[in-house]
Length: 294
Image (cartoon, rainbow, N blue to C red; front, side, top):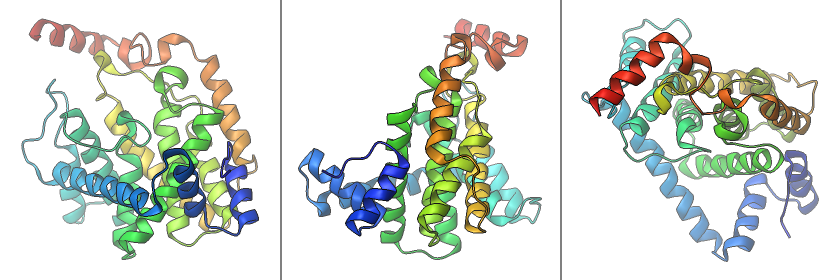
């Protein structure tokens, strides 16, 4: 059985069987789904295609707005600023942030995205991974392998903690997505197992306690901008890990800590729109206006 419940378990299984992490994840999926490796890889290829199309649509469509009218067009704005040489943070992070905004805006406009691991955090992994892949001219199969790595990381997080904002706050959604992205980027860039684990741990530690407080109950404010910071978080964590910086706290202990923090959060801060930014005067005004318009 190619089963694992922790990131260390995933790494140990890969080492024991002398397999890559993507191979372990694919073998696990074969056992569960009874699909062939070719079929599983083809499904992931289709996911990658949807990710690319969402990024392109969000960056190029000039009339992309959400049904509420609250969001749309910010990804394009940032991409244009970067092209005009106005970036303060450098091309890679700026482009990743623009893609993250764009993909999350596509989701808010009710257009196709891949929920990785949720719709509310859908921009983080694709933005970070696609930007690095483009920068370093990685082959499609390499990117697909990195997506399987992200899948393994997400599974380990879900089994030890949660990827649901309603259960664990936004640390469980955007935080998990950043962890998945950080590990995937490290793998794509040839990092070793220890570097991968450290990247995930570093990215998760950054967002411990992050609340889920969607304004008017919509996955728009502040969710879309959190996708942007999540993508940058992932790239910073990957950069540190690839440089040899290690997480003092082991990755699975970080995940368990995230679970405990999520359990300690009051319900008002777990997707109920009863606290945090959702309870501010401006948010309540927006909520009332949307209710009247509907």
